[in-house]
Every structure is written in structure tokens, then in C-alpha cells.
Length: 335
Ligand SMILES: [Zn+2]
Ligand SMILES: [Zn+2]
Image 1: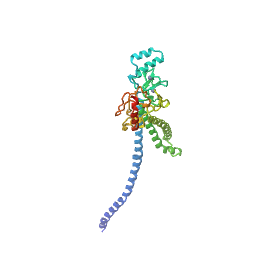
Image 2: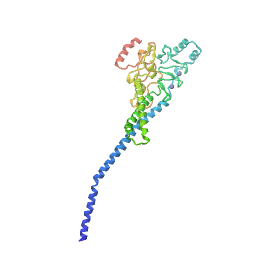
Image 3: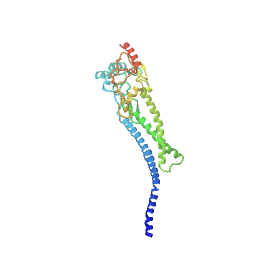
Image 4: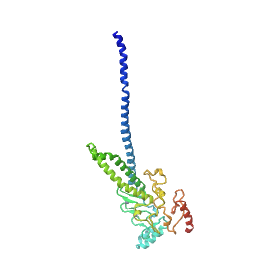
């Protein structure tokens, strides 16, 4: 009898064990879901998304920064040097007026439309070249720099035609880098002042990280906005302080071709390359498209830009249908 009862009890015991085990399944399920949600939120979402965005800004910032540092300033091409005969004449001559006469003869064949404030041909006595439009001699680099913007101590280089795009991108990415750091550190910064941070050395990193990022963000923001405005107006920092002087007098908008063309002058025609510190600026830096109103009528060689190809003496592009109409009307007066 005992054996029979024992045999009957065993399956019931096993069954109960199974039931008890199975009853843990919902608990295990909830624990797995909680564990997974913790991992997904903390590791995948917070750490990975922060790190991915952070590194994206960091790489672009360092890339454009080093491109600005390493780009050699562009110098005037050989055609702006005086031919040997004129050079000798110029060096022998002591009277400035006669020297100007020599320069005026040479400049006729060059795409140079700007003059000094007194109407003289812009000549660099150190580099011995006729300065192309927008070119200036940098005393720090001791050379003439094409489309010189300013000499920047933060990159230990001249910012000009060869690296202006990189410089603007450097400002943009350093600003985003600082903004991202300040925004993500803000919550810890608040905790610092409410004494909720553990007392470790990380506490002071958090404090200074926020201060430095916020301080740089504010100062770069103003500089970046200013340069974006300059790009839109097609002006360099030097030209913003002192308008370029054309034959008809100073004109601060002398090189402006309309907002979208001004943007393309610096960033290039293909928008897909605008965000990258890859050289895509338009033109050669030696000659620039100027507005027709500023030209000396005797020197005008009128033409159109065809498929973005710039002709040597061309200085007028119709901006719209209206401009084209006025151009057509204006044409007979020029002949
Ligand atoms: Zn020079
Ligand atoms: Zn310089």
C-alpha cells in the first residue's frame, strides 16, 4: 500500500515543482525587460548617442582647424610682377609720380580695378608686385596675401583666399562642439551647485568644462555671425573696416554679386561639399568679379560668365532677368 501511495505522490510532487518554476517566468520576464531597458537607455541611448554626436563635432572641428592652420597663404601670380624693363626703370626712378606712371602702364593689361585712397596703383615695395584686387601685405607673414581677411594668432596663419572656407567652418564646428558640451554638462553643473555631485575630482572637471565651453561658445558665436554676414556681403574683414577704392571711388559692396553667388564664392557651387573642409572656393584669388557700376568705362571688356567659367576681363554677371534687361539697355552706351 505504501509503495502504491509513494508512486502516486511522486508525479504530483514533480508537477508542483514544475508549476512553481513556471510561476517565476513572468518575474524573470519583467526582470529581463527592466535589465534590457536599463542597458538600452543608459548604454545605447545616452552613452552611444552622446559619444557619436560628440565625436562628429570633435572630428569636424579638429579637421577644419588644422586645415586653416596648414593652408599656405596664396600669393599673387607672376603676371603681377613688373616685367624686367619696367622693374629697372621703377627702381632707378626716385620720383613717386614717375614711378606711378610706370605702374599705370603695366596695370592696363591686368585685371586690377582697385586703387589706393589717392587713386594710385597699389604696389607692394617689399614683394615687388602690383597688388591684385583684395590682396594685402601681411606684416607678420611678410608677404602679399590674396583676398587677405586678417592675420589670426589662434591659427598662427593668415586667413585669406586659400583658407577662408576652412576658417568659417572651424568657427562653425568649434561653436557646435562647445554648445554640445555645455548642453550635456549643464545638468551636472546644476547638481554641483546643489551639492548633489559625489565628492571626487570629476566634480571640478564638470565645473570648469561648463564654464570654458559656455565662454568659448558665446565668443565664437559673435565671431561666426560676423563672418557669416561678411560672406553674405562678399567682404573681407579688411574691406569691412575700409571699403575698397575703385576708379569711381570707394564702394563697400564692390565685390558683392548677390547672396547666393557670394556664398558660392567662398563655399563653391556644389552644396554637398559646403560642410566639409575641402577646398571648393570659386575663382583664382588674383582677379574678382566686380559690379559694373564700379568699372572704368575705358577699361571695360563686357561679356557674360558662361557655365561658371570666368573670363579674364569680365566684370559683370546679370543677377536676374531684370539685371539682364538693364544690361541689354546699357550695352549700347558702352560701345
Ligand atoms: Zn607684399
Ligand atoms: Zn599673415
